[in-house]
Image (cartoon, rainbow, N blue to C red; front, side, top):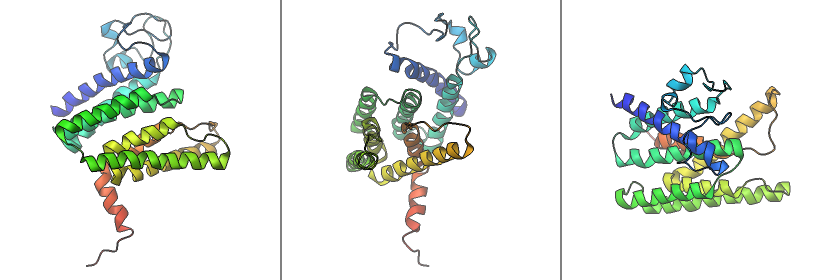
Length: 257
């Protein structure tokens, strides 16, 4: 029953995250007006806003103008639902669950906005950091030395590569939004995990770029939205961090029987 409840909860939250992803870059209030079709602007009644189910029943089209609804809406709802369950599986009903699940919800919004608009908003990062600080003050999820060290390590790591890229390519190769995003990620993951998480994010991005280049079916864009890959790297270490760290250090520290 817990998993069913969390799936439904995650899908409902995912529906709200879709609102954030659509409205924030367009400077539309998250409260007013109510939900509307992005194609014909017709208000959407509540019975057409049931997460996942409405998309399936409507066959991915607006009931009024019959224009296709972006599959992003279904993807975000499903992704949010499954990641909510994954967080519960990892942390159970604990302060860590609430701390990191909200972190994951922010990652989803930041990633999809950057993917479609190539923007990482300062105000979203500030809200995410403020939430982490306030929650940590009351529940001490992350030791402060780890959190502050991760904030500095993540930001400096990305700043180094931003400066290096600018020197090598004689132009801006990485936005400062990515640098700030990495710093906030570091606050949540701590310094031990954030560097490897960011490095893994670069590897994910490189793999996708190489695949796009080799297939020849898609044109590799001049600007790569890095936030989604940093988010995936962060999720990898959030769920599997201790195991990956143990394996990583075993490559350099011999084990004696």
